Length: 302
Length: 329
Image (tube, rainbow over all chains, first blue to last red; front, side):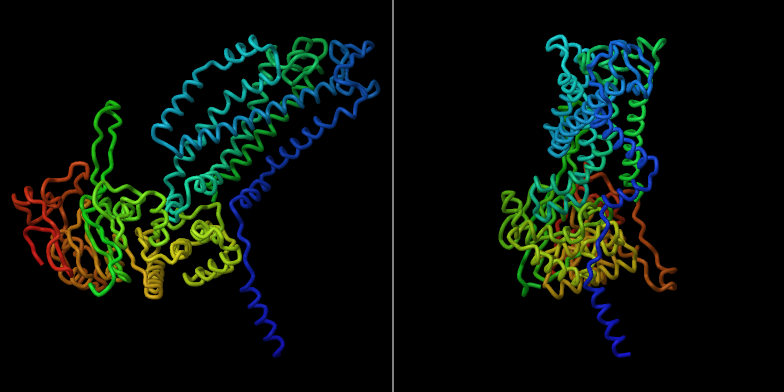
């Protein structure tokens, strides 16, 4: 009996000492995201496609620029080793689709990364400093908005020749504008929150306020926008490649493959279908993941 | 009161804001909003000064100007012999060790991405960066116990707490540097009545324990009466009456204070039913173009022509003073 009492006392004492781990907003968001089935499936598909694109070419005996003279416009078949068939020059479509995926995903992710980096810094600076600095920076942004995108790209291409890095530059230079506006708006609304004022009263320096209080609170929206930016980048790259302004042969991207495929779609539909399918699935997945993230991080849900 | 040490001496503090007219041309002159127009007061150690007045009368702006969050247009804020309005930014930051603030919205004043422990520790880490993590944690836990929070919730996040608990966190953050004065900007107006009592009593206890001075801003007169030693009544950026809590509540002198007092509910249904409320006519005038002379004259029941010409000043004893040319203490 006495033992029992001692035990329970010790237990309650232990319980008092135990520190309860709180769930942060990030953990909450992750749990909400995990419960979103469409987003989780899409994330799985994206991981699968990324792995396939990165390492899948080892599954085939062909290289991306090998021409199989005996098998031009060869329909997809397992026996010949051309799982997705071949194109008009006898190159293996499976390997080329994966290679195109590498380029497209790279452009997408890199472009989005560049846009997020420049946009976040520009927007946060503009919003936090405010006043004349803000006004000048925003007018500059509006001027950049006014430059026609296609005109800008064609100009770059005529000056410097066709180059995949130019595509990066062109896409990145244009897409950070939206990001900067979004981050600036967020910063402006955060700047007047009471907890920023409280931090100021506590003597926290301006730089610490930006890094400890503003940036973590903006990150959610940045993450959402970044995932939605990737498919947009891929589409833009495809568009450029479709017009013949993107990657150079024998390198390829999904957009370039679509362009080739569209010319032969009456006789060899697989040359269009496989890259198109990959691209559509990837874009869908990115959008679903972005939507899932947005729902998970939505403050209204709390 | 004079036997106690003088902490804060505000002299003729003015806070003006420039209001830009968006419809006008960019170079059109901006209008001036006189949020606080010449308020003076003294605060002694261990004392609580209540500030009351209707919404938009400049209570919060006054508090923010005292702590230096908004720049003062004119006047002095003398803290222990040093004028805070003239101090460079760096030295002003040092003074934040001694003056702290509690905010109106408990949840909005806490960063949603930081744990309670981090929030309370932030002032400590800012001013004493050499403290070890264990020491900081120890102090934070002590402070949490003091304000009535269980120390084992140190790793939780603000959204997991109720409004009252959040306000306790805010109080802990303000107290951790052991300040001499705390400005409470309507700390209880966002809370339920029962929680209000808890928080107000907590503030009273802590004040007695740590010898704090409080500037307590509220628009709830019963709360102010409960906690304050002296009360300042503000109207449209001006001080209209200042006096000890007892003198002011027993014998309100200024017509505006009278009207305010008559609106306080009496906890006796018979008395409450039969009392008359001196309703003020009209709305609060715009602080962009306040009335000439006495700012209250447009709504004052006893206003005369003289009131438009003379701007009254606070006059009376140190226990009770009023700014009105028709009434005297």
